Amino acid sequence: MTKMEKCIELAEDYADRAASKGCDYDDSYEQYLIRCINREEENVSKQWGVVFRIKPNKPIFNFV
Image (cartoon, one colour):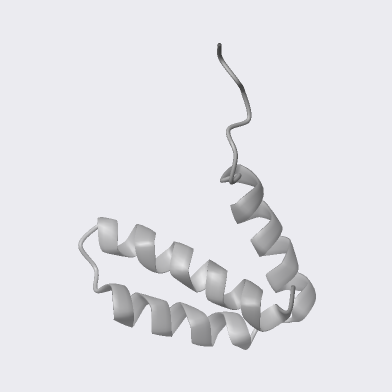
C-alpha cells in the first residue's frame, strides 16, 4: 500500500469521525489529507497501523 493510499484512508476515517461530531466532511477530509501528505512516510504508516488495527474488517471474536 502506498503512502498516498494510506493518507486517503486516514483522511476518510478522520472526516467520518469529524462529520459525526457536526463538522463538514469535505473540509475535514481535505485538511487532513494535506496534513497527512506533508508527514514522513514512516509516521503515516505507523498512524495507519494504529487506526486500522483497532477497526478490523472482520470481527475479532466469533460468538456462536
